[in-house]
Image 1 (cartoon, helix red, strand yellow):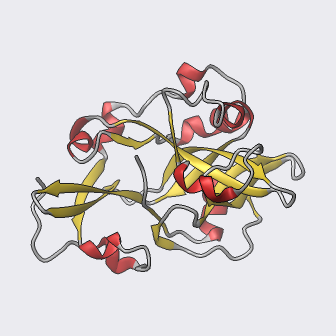
Image 2: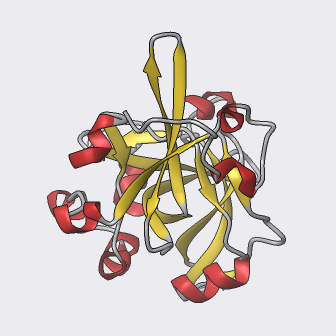
Length: 225
């Protein structure tokens, strides 16, 4: 799964990067995004007739849900079933988005201890997670989920799942709607995966109240595995 991640670039930087109109209205950076937090997403807006950088609540709430509380359990959608799941399939077909990120966190248990790791491109380049969105309620609350896929290579040693990451050349096809699910849901290539490094970080990231760049710093003592 992907239950925590970092997205720290400014709205202006994200707007330029994704060639999107910024409608976020002051969404700030976060080094410790947690379920139900407001997050930046890039989607195609019919009213703007273009890509927009928007704000969504992390945890998709289907339009037929009676209240939004269940969204906390729907932060991820499995790529293997997203096209057929009653909760996710309508959004996958018509309401896809990109979720900007710098990297994501996972934990590995060793005995009674849990070591946090941060997965991020060694180059510092931004990531675009494959996402889906849905409006909910009379005020059309925008909610979203991040798609996950099977982890490969060294990333599988940290967790068996990882976000579905889309390189720049796949952004337009993902946002367009329609398309061949098998092609849209292709995981990263081995070369692309090799560009992502696994960094041990301190335990402070485990508390959702903590935030700031210090969360990405390595602990005094840590072993990769």
